[in-house]
Length: 218
Image (cartoon, rainbow, N blue to C red; front, side):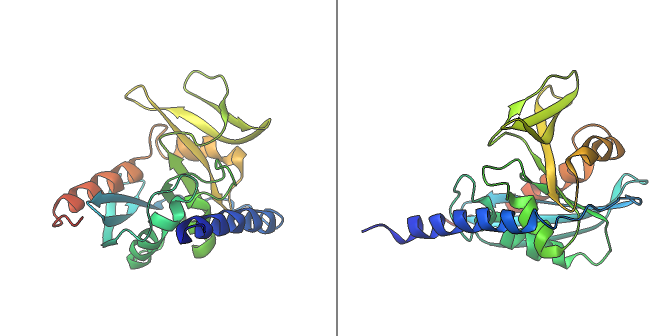
């Protein structure tokens, strides 16, 4: 007899595939004319506690204008390709606590650069019905194309995202989460400061700092 978690994971993988077939037919492209306020969200852990930090960032002032967080027990174990089961619930709660309006969501996780093209950023953008961009530190799928500071990432010959060089010499990977075209990504990253997006770096540091203050729970 197969275990309950294995059956559940198969179901959600099939759900991702079905969801992509549906939304890819009617994917509207948002024209981002005002990128003054950006939302960014990341999750850090303290034992089995997950802490999601959401930030509303003013790009012109280069500083946060609002910070919110939400902590809970991690809803699900980490499963490659099904990260949304673990991190989307606390991320969504934290984002919804933001009182300021924002025009673009940055998510620490993949968008369509995903085995089933439904990464964490796709799920959150779809639920919120707002433009979302996935920013990840490693690849799940894809082949990196050439470039000095940035270049394409292809899956089966199709460009689904881009790699960008980090200031520390590493790379990060950006792909559409929702309501964005792949071709918009280089310009968006440029508008965000050309390196690893500062709003997301701030959310990352904030989540880690707050998580350290939580009593660990195993």
